Length: 136
Image (cartoon, rainbow, N blue to C red):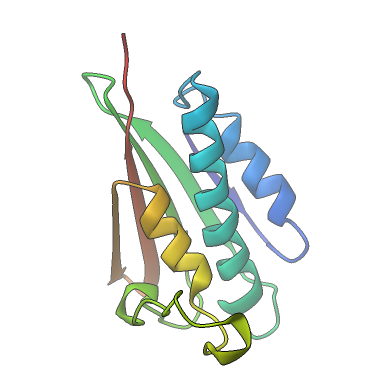
């Protein structure tokens, strides 16, 4: 499943619901909860920060592996180049007021998903998240 949103301003909820409605999504409620949280964090980051004006586009997609054991979610945008994986993980042992602002969203995505990768290709940011799906 692939879909393009243009512009993305004020469309976070619509983009998230589109991804969650994909026929590639598992039926397991626990997995869906984790996947949804990761999608929410990733989509919000793109909508809020990728474009200065907020009027850019985003293409989203899901794909289930042929053996139906791995879900891939891809977010693509042409906003300013930004690799969220280069940012160090926050020190969650510190009190909230002692931590640096930002970085918790991608940290949460890393905890919830099995694999996250980033690449900049053809003037686009491409964030790929993968989650193992237990069937049977």
